[in-house]
Amino acid sequence: MHTPDYSIAGETVVITGASQGIGRSIAETLAAGGANVAICSRAQERIDPVAETIEEECAGEALAVECNVRDRDDVEAFVERTTEEFGSIDCLVNNAGGEFVAPFEEISPNGWNAIVDLNLNGTVHCTQVVGETMREGDGGRIVNLSSVNGQHAAPGESHYGAAKAAIIRLTETLAVEWAEDGIRVNCVAPGLIQTPGVADTLGIESEAMPPREQANRRIGYGEDVADVVQFLCSPAASFMTGETVTVKGVPRPGNSMEHDLGLE
Image (cartoon, rainbow, N blue to C red; front, side, top):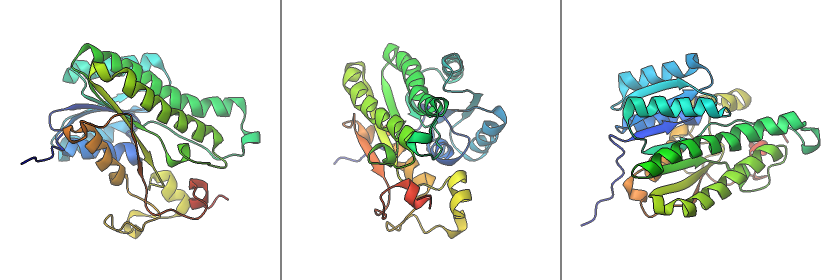
């Protein structure tokens, strides 16, 4: 009788943008499952506490590295340190990203480029560098973080939505191009998830959040996304590639994160 295998114990996983929010939840969840995680942030002092918590409380080990995913040299140095510490890389989770809200006509060229550079080009840098390591080895798994705002209209977030939509198409294309190399590429599109920024904006603290078991939720936990990421990294998802998994509760009026944030 078949038993599904969701284990990532002993795997090496690179997770970008892991100092807080969804990225931290993913790092802690996978490390609790026995994975060794290489995590990064643009500031060493922000990523060190995450690694310390993982080392103290989780089964897996953690390597914390300062890395700006927009800088190709930084990414190459991060990957080199990871392979020196853990050997080969089994999984890559492209989580690093960011946004700001503004009407399209008010977004400056610098503002547009900054968001696209962080969300899309950062994903490209990490995927190309880690992908080279995977292709030289036994393959691997890549999970890209998009957003529901890359799947439908997102007023006030045209730059962010465009970048996240491009990540979905990149995922689908690489799943085909790299299939013969033994690399599965999938994507996760979170809805509204509680992060420090969202908590500040909405004033919703963890203590006031509804239980995770409740499907009728306006806002989710980082662990809701992390659980899906672990599935996509595990053998249980061995026949899944090129897919985008949307992680959200019930639809909200307006169908946009801007509406949920009260910015309309």
